[in-house]
Length: 233
Image (cartoon, rainbow, N blue to C red; front, side):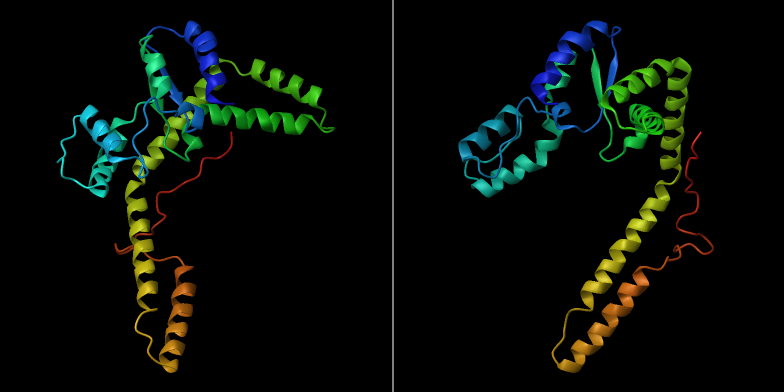
């Protein structure tokens, strides 16, 4: 799939069949995220950077050097992204919501595909492409509104689990940062062979310890407390 083919499908197949004021949820495939107007890169000249900043209403000094202009571009790049499919859908009063990167578990379509692939894999023992196509159609035809509703509810449950465990992620992230700092400090200040040996010993100890679970900074609290895995239905 590429953007040209995706745009054709979008205009000719999807949009004519959408209810008014629909919300389209997309993942992070490249053809979903083609930008209508890309921001200048570090290789762009100053005139291009100045024009982009001017168009976005960002103030700058004419005396600024190229690195300074590019720093301004980077600071305002994210909030000024303009995606092609967003513009196309907005023309028909539809809007787009993008999933967080690397979170297929927040997309019921991904779960549906997983169910389809599992069904095909269990039925197609001879790996015949014609049989594969028939099995895909067979499974899709059997997935009605009730199954889709279950998948959507399952995604909402996963989302609530993420929200409930945000504090755990913060703690784990802090722990990783601390370990990295400790390990980097042990490599500094080696002025002799004996110092090198001591540092090697420390490095080994830190590396092995970092593989072991660390307790939370809160007494009696496990870092992974509250995290659960959804069982297959």
